[in-house]
Image (cartoon, rainbow, N blue to C red; front, side):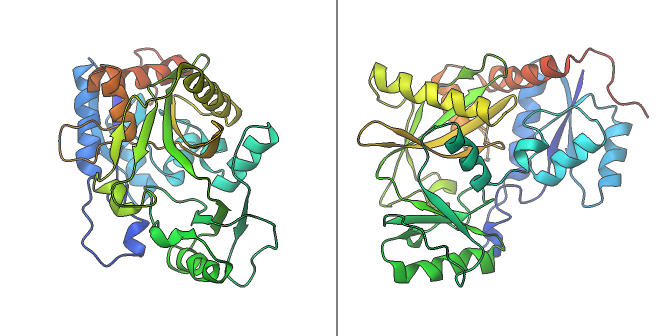
Length: 327
């Protein structure tokens, strides 16, 4: 079994680079190298495969290396490419990856699972007239890595909303998702597996001199991490059951991370599902992924953690030792 570990430059920071002139550190190679090392330690053959702008070059690399399955696909283009050529890969399929945060929230709401009220605006001149209660929270509809998130994204007055919407729609080039800002405890729930998914210890994010998890706050590891989070047995059960239902409703595959706010009344509100959740652990130069913290709390090594996710995908495809690709 040979695993190709995708990596591409600026994987985690490409959206933030559109907003900032700062010299942003790119840990994409370090992240992929850590994954490759873990996969090798688990007994698999593994090699790094750089995602090229020309997909033909990437396909050539996969064929020449006789790759059976791809790990670390991390964008819509990569997933579409892999599905188009019938190449097995770890993670959710195009049906979910191509779905915006707003569409995911609609699906969750349709199944009567809690999520904040919201609307989407393509620009500040066409803001829907809906009765949402302030404060509001504004973010890119397809964002990742807290890109474009600052303290200003918490909007307390209607007159401040257009500026924040424009900052996202004009600079990032995406529509803005505007939802009610739920006051409570910010948590994230990591899940691995498929038919009977395994839920990792709940992680709570406490802010260090911040009101929300901004880009700098998150990517510079300024959060105060509590994992496992301190919830009662009943609260933990409710959170995990809700997260598991959302994972299945959205048809997630192999692994994913569900972000939530637990309101004062104990209701766990769905914010978003990260299909490209960070899996790195504390060793190396790469930013520590939330799911890496969870794996550590579960006393899993990097090789055990990454291999478990990889094995779920292998089982899903029912792959054998024979190569899935032939030159």
